[in-house]
Image (cartoon, rainbow, N blue to C red; front, top):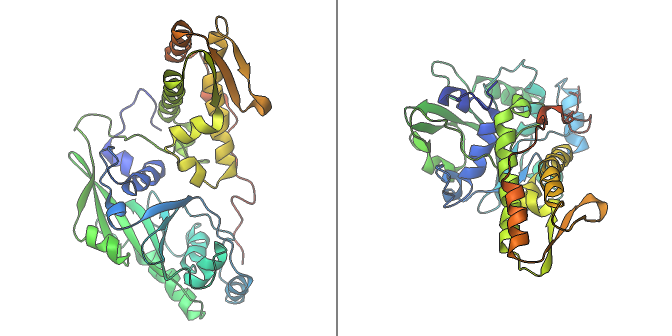
Length: 358
């Protein structure tokens, strides 16, 4: 585990699903300024959803049961990307790839059957609104190993059961001296293949420094990132900065509202609206409030601070510039000794992490 006092190596970094998810998010953002090349944006892809459940049609479920194939319903891939000409990419991030008998094989089967008509049903889209789908696993490169073997075997058994499958491939990450390179294996969408026709450096950093970029998504439930103090502290600083930006731009002589939803959206660059994991979003709200509440409690000793209805945030009366500076000082201040690790951890419900079927 990497703590706030450790420096994560690039080798550790590329095997972290949290990093993998965030680097995909940055790769879909043009001109992102995050030292991450917008490879996916150049290929015409944007983030549609994070952890969106894909309910499988009953006909597909019955076919898989009849064939004796274990599956998960609904699967919740890490990311769904929307491309040009009704093309979609289903992204799943893994520390390492797996075999056909692995414990994660049931989820992989459920992703591989997301052919256009099945995917349309999962997203409640009208017929003909999806022209093509690709399942892409993002993982670290492992030279000398056939990283596609497990997916190839799973595709073959589904085809043998006369169940339609979608194309699949890999995007692999490799650590180099001053960054991370991205390569493609197997079948990936043509636009992405053009961008990664050879290894391309997608993330640059100065050797010897902590290579982690700004994490848009600060943690993933039920993963080691959920216990990483570095991520939580970084998230806390961004929350305070977002609140300070609102205070700095507000007019004096008026009340200013600091709403938790607005802070979360600003802190996650708007991606919180695309995050479909309700438990994780609840956690975002909980930790955002835990960061700001003691800061505004400190400011309330000298400034009028009231809670908004339903604990949605706070109203602060900015009487003058001196009042503004009091609030800004409170936000700049060192956080009290809050042990973020004592906040309730996310435990996925049965709905969020369904048991394999079959």
